[in-house]
Image (cartoon, rainbow, N blue to C red; front, side):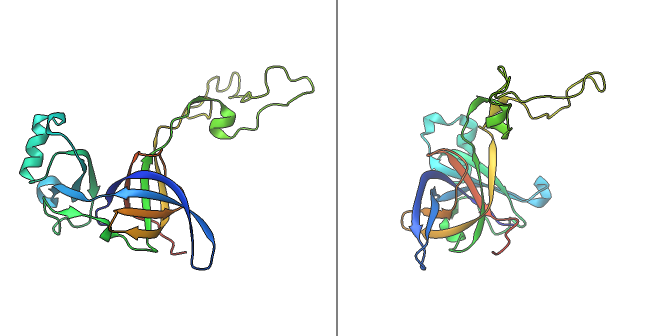
Length: 213
């Protein structure tokens, strides 16, 4: 496994394939991502590469972090992300990774923060059917129904699907196909949807379960 990249979701659009089909795609502004640090197997216990994204004002960065960036000869970065790799010997602090890592037709996994929906009921959050609309139903139209037995076990099991906070969690869309790579504008065009709202940060790396379809 090699290092990935960091980007920002710009939004969705549509493109036409060579056979004239219209495909929904997501545009992501990716990199360049400077290498801030490299974790070696022997002293650190694992192999990893730490990447930065988007230059930050030095006044906005804490003093210890400024020292880390100065040691790597990299401008202060707003976002840091560590990617586990199989072999970190080919990475050096100060180098930069870009969109040349990916090619059209390749598969990637994209991790982002899903859109927060606030407090939601069982029907919206879990797709419950709800109660009857008429025939004696009273204030139970959107009720979740029973949540367990009475005396045995006499409690509600953990992880029971109920109403609660929905969204605003890390989500990974797996096996997305790369539709287009624009090296001049650092744009990555992916087929399908990507977690997160417009302008949110996403992390992209090679797919771990690519099927080749």
